[in-house]
Length: 98
Image 1 (cartoon, rainbow, N blue to C red):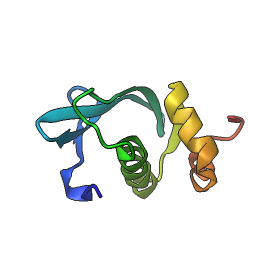
Image 2: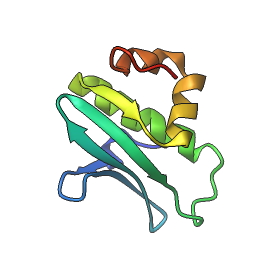
Image 3: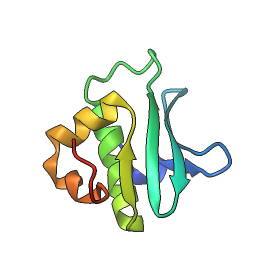
Image 4: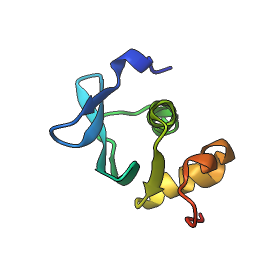
């Protein structure tokens, strides 16, 4: 299980970062008008845990939910995650369907 304290929001590089076993997993984003566009999910090959992507995305979505901003997924992996976890559909802006 991933600890929420390990997640870093790197404002300068506009990405959420999580270090695991010396590897850096990240989700790149763009922030505009109370919307966060999640553009790219990067998980290094060195991370072998099959559930890591699921836990990482859950952690990022919980963080975004706390900030009370909308999510626009532009990455296919992130859109697929929202389809599997309907509780995060409430974060989508009006008019966006997945």
